[in-house]
Length: 297
Length: 265
Image (cartoon, rainbow over all chains, first blue to last red; front, side, top):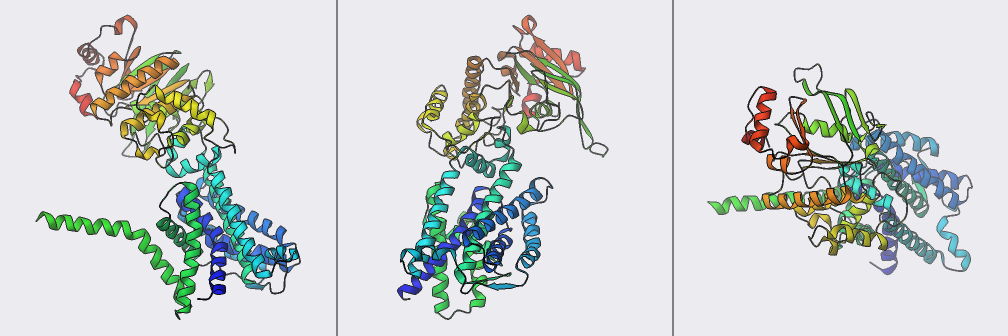
């Protein structure tokens, strides 16, 4: 792997890290398995692509994409807390609805952004090459998002959000309306996911309505890889782990593809990776239980 | 201070499993009173606490605290007036968060949460002060995760959390039942200390008849969804467990042994 391929994978890892940080918020902090992600990621991409294609300023397009994601997460939260639909199903319902909505927004199944003004070209006016400008842009954006999450989870509201994922009854008895914290968490998470979608659309130069398939699993894989390399569970280390996890995931995928792996098998491999990581504790336990039984004979 | 008027609660109404948990319970508590509640399993003690705390809503009747009608308010809406310690020590704290972070949420009980940093230097000082009366050394462990603490330590922390913002009414739901005897005794002593220091109006459900008559200023006994015995003042002073059991027999018409209450756990 030469240096430019390496850098471009790292760059991709950084873009997707924003999505993975969103998944971390729901999956780990809120303890909510949120499948909205598969719909809110292309939603962000669709909103940004449509607006940029129509000649809007990329910055405005990205902000509107972020807001659209927040709205999608809020909807899932309302389905779950107010209509009492289970978390998993709430996410699936929003995701399914979003498929049609994304098609409506784009007006067709895909939009190409070739030759359009993109947000990470902002620095080129300073005389920086397009390649460097792109890399610096994503590095800075990810850093800002990570630091914002670290800060937010230390605020009073952030503490209530964390406690909601840990012990709902306790926070309720302390006067926190957990319906609102769940909605807030889902809104923030999907806002980040849509932001990532908007950036990915510009980074790869096109948007496809199917680009969200399996996104939640990629997010989970990044979170899990991050936890494996950064053992410290403090928030600031955990979020760093998620970013690293996302970058490592992309590097592994790049290497796999260069070893002539069939790209169609990528999702299968990612799923197996996540199953392995999530199932490892149970497998370990059964194994040691059998050994204990054997030892007693 | 606290009034429950004609409280009725029925579970599984209209089904074969219908169970009347409260049959028109009336209870009036004065400011500063410390009531202990006893009764066998299914007598309605926990239901009474649940309707006061708002985890359950009464089918009929009213719950009033400080002239405010709370009957239809949900648990988090009552949190500024009522705090509660559960039987399970794991229930009152968030394990993945630090002691200080848990205390921040307790400090903000019932008030708006903002975007300011939760664990501030001034607050740390306040927390250390509050924790120091436990004599458990928790004041030096503010940044330890609560999951690292023992059941007794967690229950002690929960008590501090329940009293950090002085509540109008403190509810203790068999809060020593899940602990070993020595730890339970320790928690009881801490409870007494805190109730005295903050002059708390307290309602404590207990399965321990010794605690029921030794602690507090008034004892009520529940049976089959009713309050069947209510003693305080002179009548209560000098009362022994046997007196209490005799009284129960007289009022309810059947015997209740000490063991039965204990085993009902």
